[in-house]
Image (cartoon, rainbow, N blue to C red):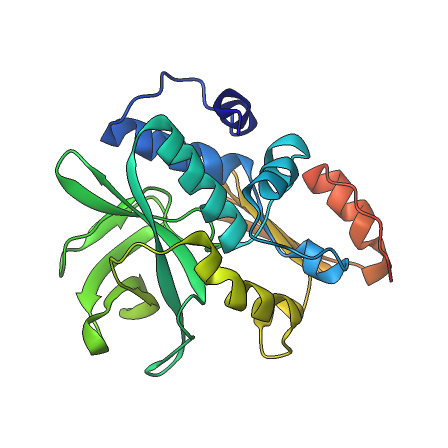
Length: 253
């Protein structure tokens, strides 16, 4: 993996070093440059946990990906720079006290300057900056308020404050996991009708002032306090993808 090409892909202009400041800048740059998307699942392009293939897709072909791709490759970048990083397994909140299976989500934990941070560029709408792992502390982020607590079976849980209450996002522990351990759930999310990734096409990226999200037949753009929604016929999806994300795909269906 060519680190400089990766840095160019995410428009990172600073000097790289192992520091909290650079870690925060790298996550922000990644979120602003690389979209979250599940399009390969809907275009019959199998996603494998192959770092070279993911690098080609995201860096050379200027695509996005979902958690295993985005966080998997970002982990490699952080390790290449010299960060103390490890991949961790997340179990995404479904409803009530129900969570997904182990390896349902991949995130990253990074140790720097004597503290540990949850780093995640692959969860769609989440935090703008790494979140310091400290239980019971309200963590103010550009995208809202977050807080860690302990959940059942000694998992850590990350919560987001919404609508006057804390909403669970996912469970995780601090154990480092090998990339291939996520293979089974990566396959599940591409093939199972129970996976929300198979339900509809989606691509989303944050902007300086908001976010733009394209799904089967809808484009939603937020800009500050303004939100616009455009509905269109689904056969126009690929033209909208080109217009708003500069990505060209050809349906194989």
